[in-house]
Image 1 (cartoon, rainbow, N blue to C red):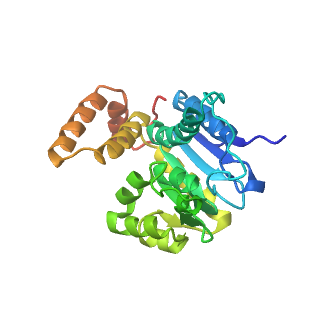
Image 2: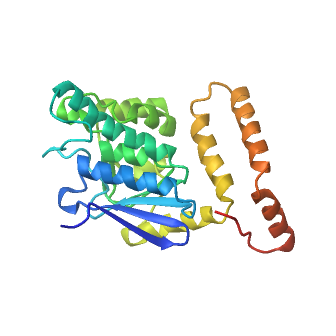
Length: 267
């Protein structure tokens, strides 16, 4: 049986994760979700990994929950239906939080449909690139429940603005790649054969910087979305900078600049 999750190291300090249920368009199941949890836990503890790229085996990125059956998450033992359903729900939603909490930047290479859970997974990533055939859609309405699910109600307005997010969430309409680029949902649209190259190009750019500085930048950017005022954001940044200055990276960065050479950072 093929692995539900493929992992690779296509470049130095870069980890590639591929959802591998192409026959189901990478629809999410408890088994696949558990595999993603485990892989992200391992990556978070691996200081040699500086960037993560997530994509899907063609023809899709991830079309959401597998309506043929999600299965049972850890902790869902059949003894209490309501508790089991909550365990399944939290199994998925906590993965979205984990993508955000992963210290390394996460790049979503959206190679097809990103719907429902797939949409949330792309939104939780730090950077999104897409192919022209990519489609983004909140589809929870399709099964008669709220489109506010898996963090989408929090993430989408912060990425594209409240007005556009309300329209997309309430109509449930499809958003093509070119519109996604126009409204700021993705950073670039490239041909299918160039998608991973585009993601890896960005990953390599990130790996040139201090790993500690990059981790603090990711943490700071996400934290800023929850900080209530400019003053609070600046005070947070002040503490980040003082903490960073006590590391080895600033000294190496300055030396490399003055000596006109590439910097070499400790993982």
